[in-house]
Structures are given as structure tokens and as C-alpha cells.
Length: 85
Image (cartoon, rainbow, N blue to C red; front, side, top):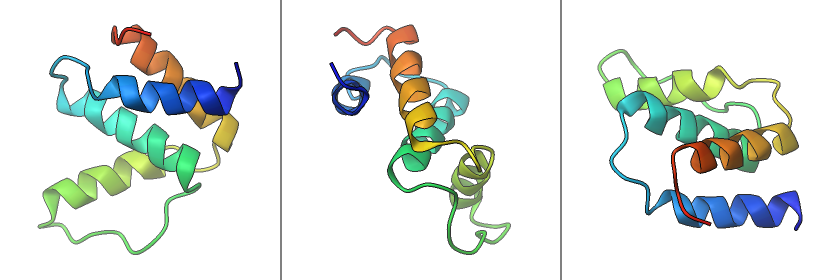
């Protein structure tokens, strides 16, 4: 199976994960955005946009990570969290 196929399946399986902490959700978000969009884009949200800032900051930590590395890390994280294949 190709990495792209594994990633697409993992994104579907992620929806069936049990409830996760905010930190895990931010990791999933950051890896997904890095895999699908690349490095963080746009202006950093203001300090009163807590959710937007947390998402932006999480994504920014992945700056420079290749698309393939982000896809692989996303698949591995979803597998680790127990989403059934």
C-alpha cells in the first residue's frame, strides 16, 4: 500500500478514535496540515484567539517537515492511539 493510501485511511480512522486530550488533537492537526498544506501559512492569530493560536503554534512546530514524513508520523500516531485498521 502506498503512503498516500495509508494516510487517507488513517484520516478516516482518526474520526473513530476515542476522546483525546487537546495535546493529541493538536498533534494530529499539525501533522495533517503539514502533510496536506506544507509549512504554516498566514498571519499568526491574535493572543485572544486561543484556539487559533494553539493550532497555529502546533502547526508551526512542524515547519520544515516533509510531506511524506508528516504523513508517516500521522499514520503512526493514529495507529498508536488505537484506531482499528
